Image (tube, each protein chain N blue to C red):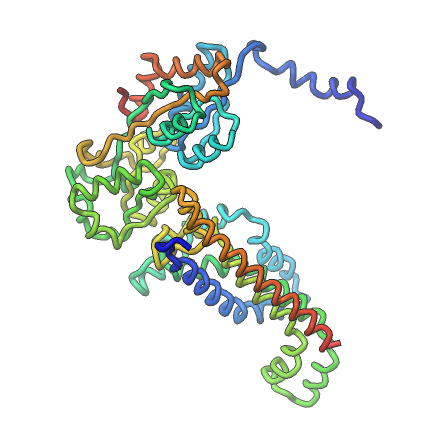
Length: 226
Length: 254
């Protein structure tokens, strides 16, 4: 490993991915639950909206985010008034960008899990007058565990691999917005291939190990459930 | 139905008929640094009309184009944003030796995207409300390096550093400022003067003594040594007509 290899971008990426995943699991649960159960007309509309980041090029997302998060933007302007800081070029801004960018990777597995729930235990819980929160934690969550695992891992690794959006709204600030993919890109551009290899290799191995763990665990969980 | 040669001909014949008169014209594939693209788009029709050859343009950052050229990218002429990368290519044996020419000298300007009082000098950075100052990545972008040198020479780098944000190249710096995310940015004068710039054209031209000249060199690739169109293009870039257009676009010529 080169002596001067800076690992800060790796930690920053892990931090960004953790915060984003935690927030997404929180926000995506009610959204996915609603999508799984509603017969409302707007459902297809919302589903299409949620899936957009899957197919849009990150440059499109980044281009719009730069406007929305900017000091005159719909989100950026009130934020500037409230906190006297901007959203672009900050870690908070990256979290908001990542929430959007990774949204479908968390909502879709959760929605699938909720849609394939066995309804009978849930109805039994209702008959026994369990509170909604209680029935969620005692009945829904155990059944949807695999969905949550998939959602968390996909959200986490997808945020870890984020590049185009960060390049467009980040501003490459060390310790704030210089995430690992940007650092690798910089190393390649400055012909520092040794550092690029190390960071890229680390990311590759790490992501693979996480995915391997999930697929292994997934199999075991299935066996136990069935 | 099997596509026969005849049916194929049937489909492409209208396309063949649309090809303009110069059927024997050769093609020049040019790799151009992003900052010069809009200028090249002005030069291209003039060259094509004069020579009857056709120009095919691919734009990117100098560093990326360099990396592509080292791996055999199919370009005939390289218009870089500095003189370092063409020199490297020559050292590595990819370009015709001794054929590197400075086609333009870049001029660095500070731009705010809105009209500003004609302030002479670095007090432009002392105005209130300047949260972010955008520069291109000094490690990779020639205009970023020049901006870094200028700020260093003025003794401002350390005081302004906390407010500095980096774009990948001057194109992104321009976008940061145009979208009001950065209040000031170090860009190429040619970007501000670009006819497609719908924002303010006010700027502060950074004095030339403050940074090393941004000599933008072009090089003829070895694989193009028998391409008469490529030779013609390199020669065209040094004609009085081309040099006048380059100057008009916001560059200096040597």
